[in-house]
Image (cartoon, protein in one colour):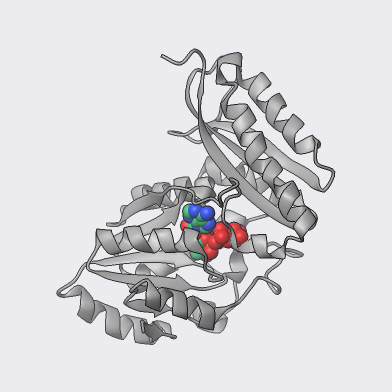
Amino acid sequence: MPHVLTTIAEAKEVLPEIAKSDTIALVPTMGALHDGHLSLVDIAKRSATKTVVSVFVNPMQFAPGEDFERYPRTFDDDLAKLDEAGVDYVFAPAVNDMYPDGVKQTRVVGGYAAGLLEAAHRLAHFDGVLTVVTKLFNIVRPNVAVFGEKDAQQLFLVRRLVRDLNLDIDVVGAPIVREDDGLALSSRNRYLSTEERAAALSLVRALTAAASNGDRGIREMISQAQGALMDEKLVKMDYVSIVDPERFTLVNEAYTGKALVLVAAKVGTTRLIDNMSAYVGEYR
Ligand SMILES: Nc1ncnc2c1ncn2[C@@H]1O[C@H](COP(=O)(O)OP(=O)(O)OP(=O)(O)O)[C@@H](O)[C@H]1O
Ligand SMILES: CC(C)(CO)[C@@H](O)C(=O)[O-]
Ligand code: BAL
């Protein structure tokens, strides 16, 4: 079984001792673990000699009215999966340990990319993510931290956080793990009914439609993707956007080169995100 650290004080007592003779890889999660998370654990295990997985549903990154209260909490099941995966430490603090004075104190605010896409639909979301990630980094003091490419905007912002604040942490991105039919694994998939699960496939259809029309320009890519989403009546699109993956800036019709297509939509009441790499222009 992994050694479970349930308080910041315990983590700060145990982990610095480990760091004297080991390197530490951290996988931050909100629990409700699936094979996507376990692929991050695999990368972590290959990147350092000890692996720490944090399980913390962070209230600060949920806007009022979002699913903080009903977010799935499956700690015993998570622990069994982490045991089987050979994880060394699980850090699972309580909310009042992480935020003894509430969530309205000092916060870490990202740059321009923290105001786009997800941020337009989830108010102050990335302040919450970057603040908790900074706290986790300071508590665990990892050499390596692994984040999924499914949350591409988050991954970009965490890389910027580490670079901009000179943190000595190697941030590793992990490829998106999908079901056999293409649906990206997500803890929120468990909210979906059978009909919604089928309709959710329109997200990956939208991305594939955009990515396979890169030679026809940005407008056509977006229009193809929007068409795939609009074909499903259970799906309500939040955005389809295309960014330059190096800068995370929205691209315009004149753009050519590597691109990232991002989609967010509500399927019934469940909000899902996904993304796919593409090439814009004549592929050389
Ligand atoms: N399908 C996936 N493939 C690769 N990484 C993933 C996948 N799903 C989640 N991750 C990564 O796991 C980490 C923890 O994510 P989180 O606990 O929010 O899970 P999630 O499945 O994305 O949940 P949610 O449904 O809340 O978005 C993040 O770095 C996230 O990008
Ligand atoms: C990185 C993270 C664990 C911070 O709460 C969360 O945003 C997530 O699960 O992707
Ligand atoms: N996967 C990012 C965490 C969130 O949706 O709040």
